[in-house]
Length: 240
Image (cartoon, rainbow, N blue to C red; front, top):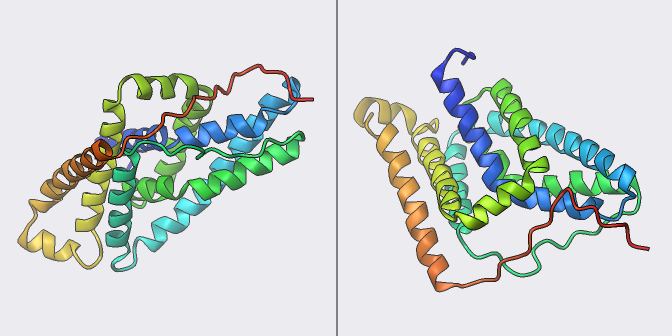
């Protein structure tokens, strides 16, 4: 896919949306990891931590793209995305952002990269599904979306807080990608193409609606606690 292809820009928008919806936790981790650094080192910590996290994520997605070419793995990935989408709509449990803040620049960078690697399974699977085997598209989408998450985290999280429909849209997007992955797996693609080509559209819509419906139903039965937002631009003095 080239820059002049509508499919390219649709996929880029999907990747940006995935990163914004699923990247809120990563932005909080970055803020927490750097909060004890001296003020002049915070921006360096954020920059190099994010740089390392992006590089690691590109590597992980590269391997995921190759793995998804194996039989049944897209189906497994689709099932995981359905679970992640449903979970996205659930109230956030208390104490889910316990991150040790480092007093050294290297320590903060290491914390950001390690925490991002642990927390990025959902991003990796979703982006690999949206990218359709194009690693260049992955890099382009990440370069655009990650700075939005990091430096615009306060705004993004406030929008999600004020307009919960944005979370539902994100969960539905994961369901859409899951449906697309399920019908384009090595073991399903040929049969669908020959006998039920309509599933290429029906499956993504159906799974998207299923994720939102199940997620909302479960959320209504399990009230939770909203965690405070941590701003990356917080100018608190480092703890003594």
